[in-house]
Length: 216
Length: 216
Figure 1 (cartoon, chains in turn brown, yellow):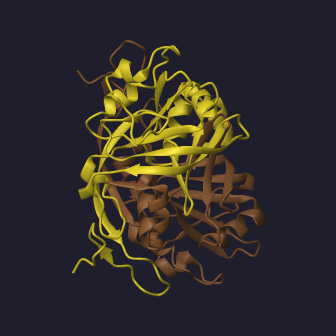
Figure 2 (cartoon, chains in turn purple, red):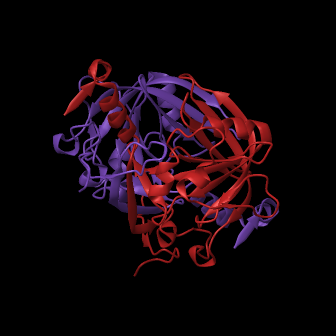
């Protein structure tokens, strides 16, 4: 089946949104925690968080124009801090519910039944029900071509369960139930095929177990 | 377990790379196809493709400085076109092998055993073994804070299997074996929890089947 650019332009808006949102592949599912200067909290699910670098530890995400998380962006610009919290298989429906258009004085934490958590004096709320989470300091925002906003921040403090961290630094996301999103609304759990050794020219890659050891 | 920013700076480089690469959550796995003006092809696995917008249909990805896909970036800048091809569970090891540092005159297609495919006169090679793929025209590149490159392009032509496309435009990625990556090297298949209805304030979200129908 094919869709040309012309075909895309002719499609029903909702059909096109589902189709094009599915093309990038599986996406990360994160809850973006923030608050305004008065401590009014906000929580928004986002599927566009991406790794930018490990040293310094930088992470980016995209905010769509006029989308629900605009309250989050206002908070981030006001305070300079936010949290990212991986969505897991115990809270995925509550996480999705944060995408409803609540009023700015309604906290999504209260509305969906998740618990704000303040750790080490960080100036934005974490999600208590999330196992892997980190505080981020805003570094830059910029408006991209279609009025989406690229937000880049530096990772300040990471929290994760001891047993999810492997000896080589790899985090076993499946072991804590982290989920992935596809399209606009499909949530999935994952099953590892395997890890793979660092690829070198003219050598076959070797399957590794979750600890990074070669599978015999 | 916690890591402060100071802790991160003290970590072994490889441990830190594994850790920080795991934080964003599950990532898309795509093969980036390109060629130079002479038709020399290049193929590189990337895990940073993200949705930017549906109308116009825009997609972005990040290229790390001095990383293997620099040959790809040179090709994209020279020709203005590239392809994105979703990695599936039949070719994930070959896809990972494209990350080896081959010489610029060695095509990763040949080296890893994947087949370049030319469709509708598009000026970049698709991957025959991939089920969901699309041709992209370069729209802009820009260098971000840590010398990573943000590449944005417009989707020109989409190919996918008929039976993976649902009536509402959603693509069932699991049905064609699309995989997801976590950390630097872990590949996983997925199992849907469910789709969820569009979230509205003060209404519970409803689980939907893969076709978008409410699950009774």
